[in-house]
Length: 260
Picture 1 (cartoon, rainbow, N blue to C red):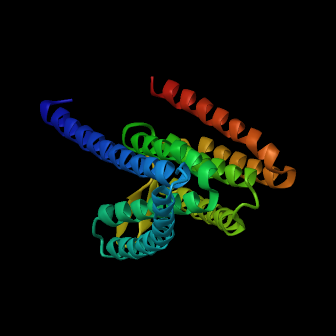
Picture 2: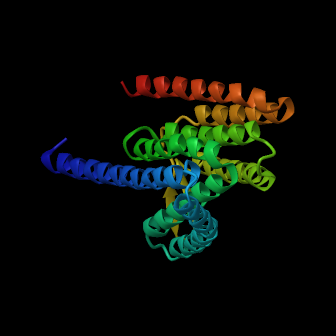
C-alpha cells in the first residue's frame, strides 16, 4: 500500500469515526431528554408546581409523538425522491431516523410510564452502539444486531402485553414488514455482490465476501422467540430476551475472531 492509498484509507476511517461519534452525540442528547422525562414526568413530587409541570410534559409528549412521526414520514418521502434522483440520501435518512426515535421514545414514555422509560434508558445506548458497529465494525453483525433489537423490543412488549394494545400489535406488524423488506433487500444483494439496485443508484448493503448465514439464522431465531412468547405468555418472553442477548454475544465473539 503506497502513501496515497494509506492517506485515502485514513480519511475514510476518519469520516467513519466522525459519523459514529455524531450518532453517539445524538444518543446522549436523547438520554438527557429521557432524564428530564424521568425526573419531572415520571418521578414528580406531589406539589402543585410539580404536578402542573408533569401535566405540561404529558401534553408535550403527546404532541411530540405525532409531530415527530409526521416528520419521519415526510423525511422518508424525501429520501425516496432523493434516491430516485441519484442524489445523496444521508440528510433525509438522518432526519427520518431522528424523528422516528423521538416519536418512539415519546410514545413509550406516555403509554408505559416508568417501565417504558427504564427500557428506553437501555435501548438508546444500544441504538448508538449499532451506529458504531455500522461504521467501525463488520456490517454482517450490524444487521444481526438490528434484527435482534427488533426481537428484544417485541419480547419486551409481549412481557407487558395489554398495557397499550395498539402499540403492541402495531410494533409486531412493523417487525413483520421490516423482516420481509430486509429479506428481499438481502437476497437481492446476495445475488448482486452485496449491492442492491435502487433506481439510478446502488445501495451497497454488504461486502462482496459477506457471510449471509448468521443473518438468516438470527432472523429465524428472533421470529421463533417472538412466536414462542406469544404462545407461552409474558413470563416466557422475559426469559427469551436473555436467549437473544446470549445469541448476540455469541455472534460478537464469532465476528471478532473472524477479524483476527
